[in-house]
Length: 160
Length: 174
View 1 (tube, one colour):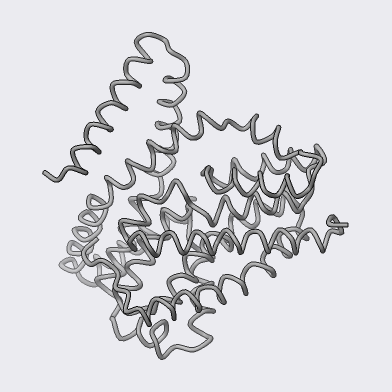
View 2 (cartoon, each protein chain N blue to C red):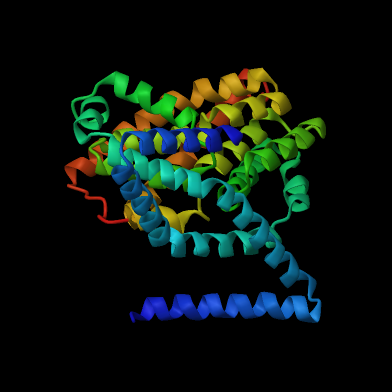
């Protein structure tokens, strides 16, 4: 994360050096864009706080280990789609699940839908790209995740 | 004030009251929701100011022509390559990718490119992939990338072409 701060500060310094006027314009644009999208972020944060309460990690741990692989994939992609968590929480969780014997295929379905399908980010995506595109992109992303999971399953020999 | 805004504001008000009351009355579920809200807000506030400042600098300094040439309708396969490299360095998640994709599009990047960008920033972020590999094994990460990147590009092209034919326009001014 620190490289982001360093990059931003460097970029700002170079920009100020080249043209203070343009820099202040850039900061104004940044501020305006940030304020414009703030309500959508607020909606997302409220949704996230409620969903994460309703679906804590223990529930995910419990359901992903289902004996039937296809039930496992379905539940994994469902949980992955409706929740949102940063990678530094998601992957340790996947690591625990892997040690508990959950298949790579199921974890692939979970982590890929988690990253690509955003039901909780719907307010933000809609604000930028409209309802139709948001729905289409999420449906397509869901199918990509399922295909990726099946390919992972084939590679690790977990399907048969 | 439109009706939908009234609903949103009363919803927000109800949410704040509920969380505040939960802390006063020591109601655990409400407190957990409040804590979730807090920790996620902090997580995002660490990233968003930097992301938006970089977007601002991008809009001021990068010429429309440059973006059009490399990521516009005339750009070929290389456009996708650039986009995936750019996505690899993105931090955060989808919520950071959306405003960046929006800015790219308003500077002339074509639709299939911005969908590729959004998809790739979800699955190809370098720090995240390293983290993933350390928990799941490098084989898992490599298979996941090899399987998903071509699919993301293919689907983005399909979706982009479909929307371009339908004369889809991104809403201005966000």
